[in-house]
Image (tube, rainbow, N blue to C red; front, side, top):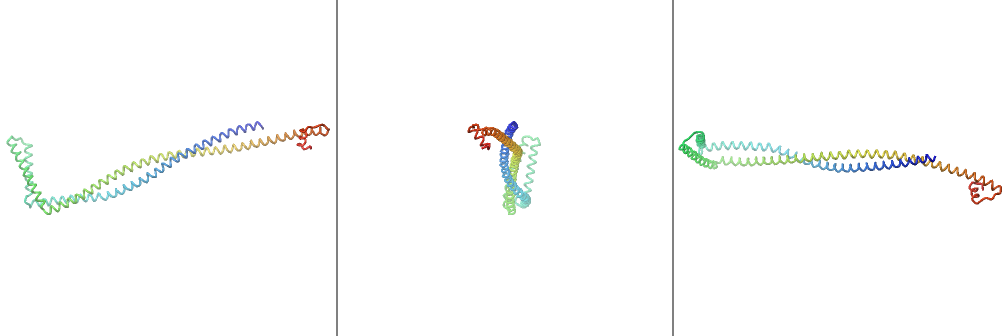
Length: 296
């Protein structure tokens, strides 16, 4: 029995160490799981914040796209109207020149003459006198054309129809160019927003990927902690069962020793009682043994 008790106590010490090891591993895994969960939650909060910012930028971009889609046809219409006004201006200019102080046909004739002279100078071999004559004629025609055109333009500026069409052209040109500038500015803003959104979405993907990694580690360590806790419970149960066995053995040993002591006491008391009945002198200790055994 004593040998078995020693084996059980030795085994109990081993199991106790196993229990402590499972507790240590469980707590370490639980700490790792908690740390990774905290990192994951921080990143998830960043993901949520970035997602909201991205939504705002996307909505802003959509609004600008809608605006520019409305402006482009308006801009095209404005340029078409400007082109029509310029065509009308050319017709008014032609009519004004045909019936004015200076006939525009005269200008065209002199321009053709000038081109012929320039072509002759460039393509025909001339002697010095002929060259000087052509150059002199070119200078004269250029001077005359400049003067005629200047007077022609001054004359046109006095024409009421020309004044009116020029005013309309200037107004329409300003309107068309303003729309063009606005479309360009909005397009640049859309492009800038697209870059910001793409950058933000890339950052969002990177953070989400890191968050997923931390979540996977959280699951891994949580499972390890759960496994170690299961092993801890199993070892703790085994330890309790073993302690019960040890307690039972010790109880049996105490009972056995008590019975052995009581048997020895009864045996000694029987001998001493025989001596007492025979009148032999007994010591105080002998008398106590007889009293304890119930003979006195």
